[in-house]
Length: 297
Image (cartoon, rainbow, N blue to C red; front, top):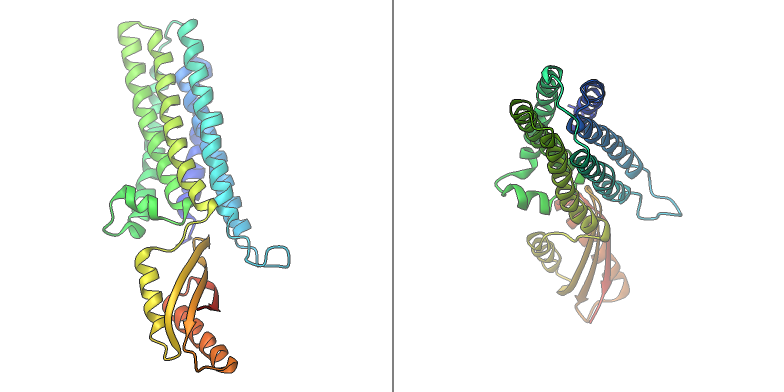
């Protein structure tokens, strides 16, 4: 199974849906449908940026970036969250306000219903795949706890985007039906406003999580406790004074351990002990790519 299957499925679905929505919105003069088209187009661009971030994050370390390029993924994830607000949310809100100021009489919604049904099918299918994939890493944690503790933004970005897309489609569908039934042209603009607010909320949540990862999150307290135990089991160690850590990428962690060694050890003994401890930590936690151990008092 391709590791980025969820992203590729969402990319294909959003691109197809965006084209269909724009065509339908142009013919029926539905502002809400055009807003949904912008939403799908932004989501398509977001998938491409996520794939770019994943690709750049895989570059090997060099003299310029001795700890690798893993945080490229966090940077592009943050950009994605900003795009959802700056383009998706803002344009939808602007179109909604514009339509409320200058309402257009509702056209025959038949083709809009067809487009919404197809979109719901594609976006719903993509959402189901995203949920299944995220459940594999969620375990027994709650959904929000799993998102908050996740170090892989690609896993929850698609989940949030698809959820917002499905909710947006439901809002547009309901407002489209009510607008046509009640012959109320203002409800189309209301639908655009709701979609814009929905995208803005999703953007804020994603930006919060991506910013936290970009600034540097450390390993969990339980993991620190296990690493402390591994280190202090070594016969040369008296105590672990401090553990500093930061995620360089979802699969790479940098550790800095301040360790108090026993006083009767010479330099060679300490050097051997450091190599032994590093090997023991890597065996238990393969994601610890960079382990720096410094003697302290």
